[in-house]
Image 1 (spheres, rainbow, N blue to C red):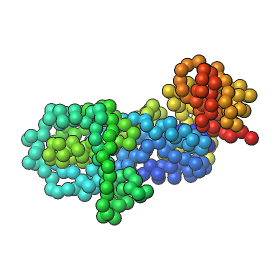
Image 2 (image 1 turned 120 degrees about the vertical axis):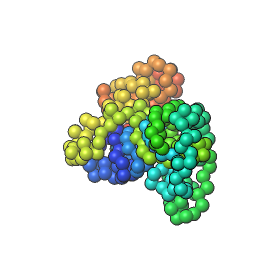
Image 3 (image 1 turned 30 degrees about the vertical axis):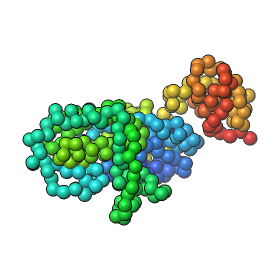
Image 4 (image 1 turned 90 degrees about the vertical axis):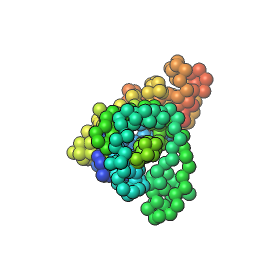
Length: 299
């Protein structure tokens, strides 16, 4: 099975668990997700299947949007509700000074380019080993500060020690770290209590399918393929162009071809008919293109 499915990941399972389940549902072994969601988190998880895994590189830098909630009063070692508190709940002594207005003002610094330390309990690799494995073993976790970009961070409400927010962050950024650092600024500490991804790149919840919906179609290849995102809408920054039989044959064998594409886009999606994606091609000059990703090799 070839295509891209947008999954509405439930809480309590890993992104890898979703992939494993999809392998059983679809019978397709080659599957990958486009951006890890923590087990606690829910929402948009795009998944590529079959030959579409070759396109994963083009989704790597997609921004992600979230809605979430944090609890004030203490931080945890994982920066979320599944971790161990760093001490007693400090909310009673800080509650009078931590207002919605103050939180909104402090959240302003987490917009634009932000220096961020990834959580020790994260999938970041240290000498080839995930940081969370070292953290669970009680070993030192030496991560480096990274620069992320926060397009939007809006505090939407506050009720007691609970604060809700919406946030859009660049690929590789950790919402947990934003919440943790905001808690440090407020001096009372904070940790993430819930998180729902509402958008990943161009994909949103409106087109996401639940695992129960997919389980009901297990073994029904046409039914599952009908739920995939139409290939012409994928990677909208790349114009779609249809090629004739001769050109398609050359592309499949890695040769340059002239295509009827007259924009100034550097990359295009090449189709056989309306929906069979054959290749991603790079413009060499004018209408001359070189294939850089071929979905089906020639013989």
